[in-house]
Length: 229
Ligand SMILES: [Zn+2]
Image (cartoon, rainbow, N blue to C red; front, side, top):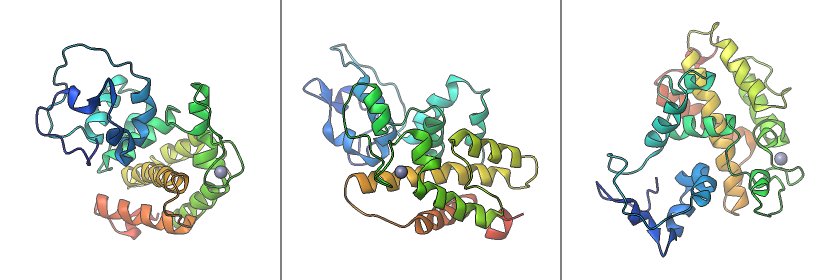
């Protein structure tokens, strides 16, 4: 968590809090984005705090271990296979649980913001819209499907896309790479959404998809031929 905070080893929780609230530097950190909504919902009380993690910094790897321990039997536990980067796996799990702080999810928690999708500027940014049904995401998955030889653009729900990746599990020798590709795809779509929302960069769908694919190939140490059937 929070590369920008650079916490020393054995830091107490209090180092993340200032004047009774989470430090703004922490909440603005890109790595914390999937947890921001959850963190803000935690009521901070004036108790003695304890060290709850033992790594140098709170990280996606740590968060992923926590999420994973909730129910190791559910289908998305497969996302921890292989050499997925922790932020990909964690984002994918939060997407599948519909816990990411999209505008629509924030509105459900009575945080009123214009719930418009920052990728297409039209629809409400529900999880299914953002990651699958949005024209940007449809084009993203169509590009990815073109590489894999699948029809990935006709889906409207995240679970349907995940279902296809799970089904392919039995057919492909590199299923872990495919699951990593699914998770990386979600993370890159989420990052592109955040970049556009906060007015920084804006990349076309094929560039984002190509970056996701190249990063998976690098992380898994495979070639493109290993992914294509
Ligand atoms: Zn959209």
